Length: 515
Image (cartoon, rainbow, N blue to C red; front, side):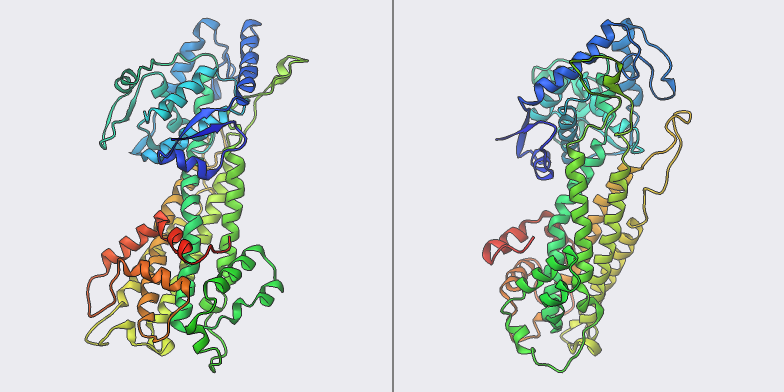
């Protein structure tokens, strides 16, 4: 099995997903070891010198001014984990917990946290032995980090709490530790705080959403191009000169992608000299709309790349071997998830716009007055309703997507007796982003199903890319021979879009699309 080395600096979203799905294991990079030990030595020096430093030998949050004796430090860290493990709701999926653990290990490997190396090794062992903590999803305010969910993760390190049993249930952590010859970890000064104070749950949800969106946005362009073929819309709005005149990066990329997908299309060639002057905005302005959405994804990817390789607990330690002292430990706010919350909210708004323009194209193809096709693509309009209700379903999914587009980051609450008086709601925003991908996939699935059916009325062949994509749709959705339920068709196509396997096969058969 592939081994991914975690060094706190080079982790990618794709690597996180490989670990999350069980396709890779992890280890701590040899480069990270000295940094981890150097930061720990600062903690040890503070303890030996009996200095008072927040997070090492004080209380937490509003209890920051209470000095804790050296004899009680281990109990302090254990109490912290136990008291903060208060999350509720459904359990996080196994993939999302594995992703969260991977991100936490990488963040601690950066060497600014001061955890004992044994803590990291215990996390690595749990992940590689597939001992996955059972973590309720709800409880994080996105500052100080994801305290409640990460505390459930930390419980497993000390042999408490529950883990997933592999059969859809849970069992006591101790059972799994004994099975694999592991012993419960004894937390030392700062260990517990570093484990639970960080943005790892937020990152796990955003990673999973990003991996879906990277494919979904390409599927949206394939759906657009299938609709262009089916509706016999013009490709002139994708002329490179148009987009060089307004060179936004996303717009340039999507117009190039449209030109690539529709290259040498017999259908496009068949109506190149038709009398229609302008198409509806949902076709003519698609490069601008799809391009703007893609730029939101690029911004999300940039933010995520930074966050995956950031130190996000508090306080942080910056070893200064030449001049040791209090300046090496800084209380700060890297645990605050505002950048993730705002990024997630912005992405969901963009996703709604993508779904909105997709639904409008569905309407264009089903309306005989605008498409020139039979009403709702029925074989016997009037007696049959064809795909009429597919648009309704797209509209219903779009309505739910509209609900997801309401920003989560604009709500804050003051906690810990006013010490933590502004929070990000980043975990809620990132979870909302992940859920929104389900609704977007349904809208895109509806457009693909309708566009492929509309193509049945054209005697000319579409482009190679559209032929390949249509074959995938037809592997699930048979052409209409009369009215029938299409519920399972939409569900299955949407699920395929989320898995992303079709795209790899289409590109393998034809060519890789511009990215």
